[in-house]
Image 1 (cartoon, rainbow, N blue to C red):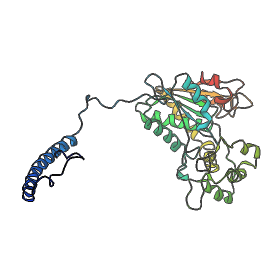
Image 2: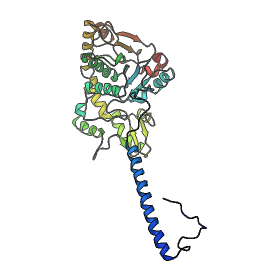
Image 3: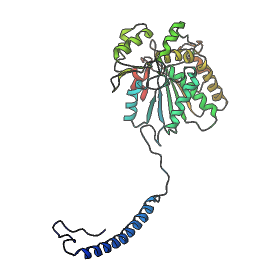
Image 4: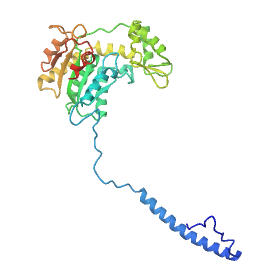
Length: 346
């Protein structure tokens, strides 16, 4: 609002009598008000202009971006683990697919890895499958190949049945069931006392630590009773399935409660057989909008029944759905994706 005298300039009061100073002071005040008014007016105009929405150079909508999880050229491999496992089991496969230019993502099922368990009463095959399908769509994936290993294979079957029944455009392009059949299984027995104890492995809360522990030793001690006191097995999980966190606590991807629920609600249930029948019926009546493949390991590592006439085995499943493609990985153990990774990925 006007220039100021430089540091070495004499003051106005030192150059003029008092009356002149008063007169000049009034003149300066008038000039100040005038200039201040103009400055405020300019500021208001500028503020209004700044408040108006910025005009973009283009009116086009936001565009979907490709990522390591999705591509416009290739379907995404969606990888689902099995019992007592997590997304970490797919680390080698993820690296190989990325190197080959294929988009892929691995998920932790509810109660496994880093995913919450939620309400144990809601732990059902349909809920597990719906979780996976919702995660796929939330990630913006339009086409995928769903791969389910072991217990995750049962989840993949139910997810496929849900997609087939929806009648809409399916996100699935193929479903791969890795070393799992629909033969009936029996869940390990648990006493009433053990059932109460295993509930502490829920999502945590007051009086329940969940899967976070103060030390590796505390976590190890908590896991051992649920795995037949097998110290070699539990110790092999250190820094792998049981990991330290930045806050010095230890987190267990392994969850005995989720294990029990998976046994009772997924593996020992007839949901796999039911889902397979639904898929077979649709395959025979008009075809499925995706292919179905049964990949199984070799003996003695495989957990599937291979022989003809075995209820719920690979031959039975193939008989129900001739369109399903069966592939045996000779020499491979139960986790084909790790024991025969090169062949699995190719």
